[in-house]
Image 1 (cartoon, rainbow, N blue to C red):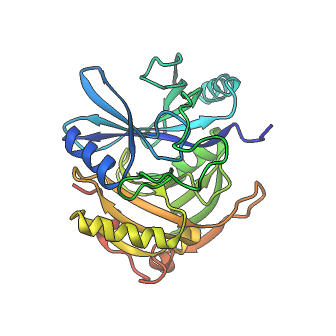
Image 2 (image 1 turned 90 degrees about the vertical axis):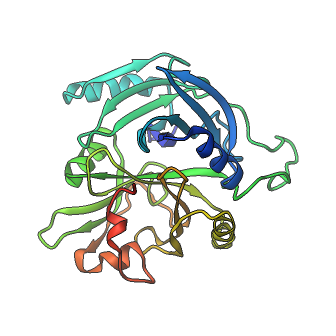
Length: 310
């Protein structure tokens, strides 16, 4: 059995002021698949998944007056891990709430919810409904032939903002047992950004200095660099606002492009990186090299990167 109780990012729920416009973008341009709709607490929601994900959803759109992140959810290895983290968080004075199977919506697993020091709502879940990917289980082709749009195979990571990066990082590493892979340090030694993982990839979640509770972006995995370049062509064709054209990170060594959904949430397509063993030694970038850390080729970061898009 895996030593990690948390396996990876399960899903994100994001706010969208125009649900039908956002749904059209995520299904027709990005190429996600709609798996369900519901209405909870008076708000309509659309559940989406990437084509190679075997579980019911990885992105949930909730109609709301503003854009942003409602919560992030991480997949647990065993059902007993819910009790483990409920006790561990409770002992640290963190208030938690348990939810039964399907209580939170269609396809939903059992869940444990709590708030991080930055005000982000975090969920741990087990038992999300398995619906299968778009390939047969016997003699499958490498990919389906009827994909639409960019069609990333899976959700990769979420990147948030916090006023106190160190408190956020300590919460995730000490209580949720994430491992830090990289950090950007200010000249006075405090953390400007950190990158944390459970899935042996460079990051499942990352945080950078900014407003508490804010979403910087959430990212989808692409299989290679050519996929990211082709995706940028698709984004440009559809008139999507591209924030950062295809380039490379220093942190994570990944290839990337950033863009905005039609209501203001920043998306990323990501590929590359490296394998992370449990004894991986964190990499440190200095404040002077922050530009190269974020965008390795350009070696500078514009102010917009540190703000919440509106």
